[in-house]
Image (cartoon, rainbow, N blue to C red; front, side, top):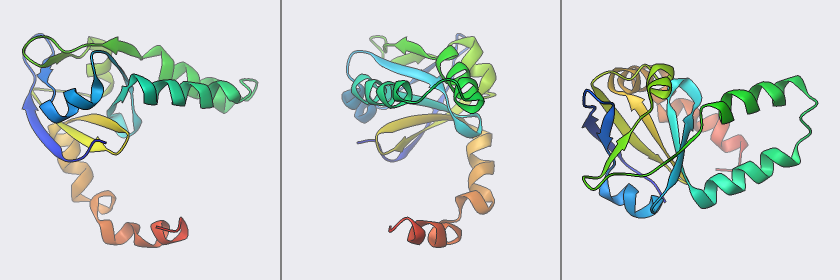
Length: 143
């Protein structure tokens, strides 16, 4: 399970440290892809395979499903961390998420996310980041 938030620098080659706790959960290889709100999603292989199975069960004849699949899978790449615990974020994914020199790597239960530092700060500074404003929707979900 992934939880917490960690601030790390991104070097000139596009590499950043993945927190040790996350590396332990991710294993030797994992998937990195475009996420929501200009973030990047990191999935352990078992979670990725579950998600792929769910997506493949849906008919791709619908326009929304085709668009989602194209965006989601076209940016996906299998990754490993190097001996220093760094992940190389491909240029296309860095551009998608507008990553600059620092990122927050956050845990979101079954996945991790990578956010540009300022984007994460901005996201948390408005209504998106206020847990009280989410209470009604969570109650409707039975949480």
